[in-house]
Image (tube, rainbow, N blue to C red):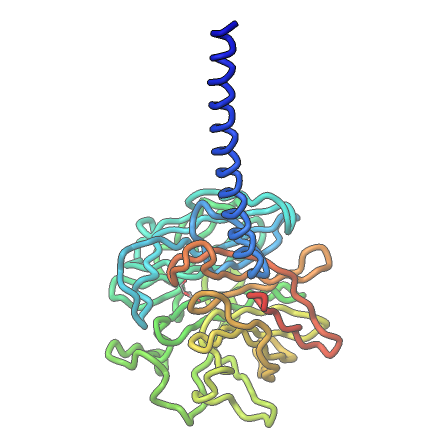
Length: 366
Ligand code: FUB
C-alpha cells in the first residue's frame, strides 16, 4: 500500500507536471495560432500552394477544369536590381483545380530552360492557348545574347509536358505574352514590359543593347506601351504587323511617360465583357493594376483607372477568367516568403460594376 501510495504521489506529481507543461504548450500553441490567424486575416485571399513559389498566374478553363500557368520562382542568390536579374527561373510547373475553392494539383515540370534550344536564362511569365487538339505554351526567356524573346511550346495535354519550337516567334520581343481568343476564334497576343522587360530598348524592330534601363528619360512623351499581334492559323507565328496598344486618357490623348500611376509597365491581359474589350495591366513601379476599355482587340483603349491596390511585394501580375458565370482574378503577392522574388499565386472574385468599370480590389485588408 505504502508503495502504491508513493507511486500514486509520484504519479500525481508527474501528472501535475505534465498537465501544467501541456497547458503551457497549449497556451503557446494557441498564441502562435492566433498570431498566424491574425497575419492571415490581413490578406484578402490565401496562397493557392505553398510547396513551391509561384507567380504571374495565367488562368484558363480547359475541358471544364481550371489550369494555371505561372512562373516558378526560385532562390538563385542573385542580388535584386532594376533588370530583374533576381528572377532567375529555370522551369514551369502547371497547376490545376476542379473548382475555385478546390484542391490544387501541381503537375510537375512542364518545360525546362535546358530543353529550349535557343534559350539563355530567365523563364518569365507564360500563358497558354488551345486550338484543334493542341495546347500552346507561350513564354518569354532571354536568348543566348541576353535579349528577351517569346517562344512557343506544344503539348496534347494542358498540363504538358511541352516541347519547345526550335526558334522564338519571328518578330517577337520583350516579355509577358498573354493570348486572347475572340468569339470568332481569332487569337491575339499582347506582350511587352519596360525596364527589366527591355521594351524601351526596341525601336523599329531593332534592339539597342546599350539602351536605357528604364523609361524615365521621356517624361513628357507618349508612354511606351504594350504590343499586340494577331496569331496565324498555325499558332506559331504572327499574322501581320506588331501594333501598339494605344491607351488614351479622358481627353483622347495618349498616356504620357510621366503618368507613372496610369501608364503600362508589364503584365498585359485581355478579357471581353458585354461585347467590350478590357485591356488590363500592371503599372509596375507604382504597383497598381489598371484597366482600359475598347471596341476592338487592337484598341484604342480608353483608360478607366486602377482596379487593384498594391499587394505585398514589389508588384503583382494578373489574369482574369470567367468560371461558371463568375469572374475571378488570379494574382500574386509575397505572403509566404516576404521576399520580392519568391512569390505565391492567389485568386479572388472580380466584379464588373453596372457602368462597366471593374470594382476596386483591396488585396490587403485595412
Ligand atoms: O516573373 C518575372 C516578371 O515579374 C514578370 O514577367 C513580370 O510580369 C513580373 O511579374
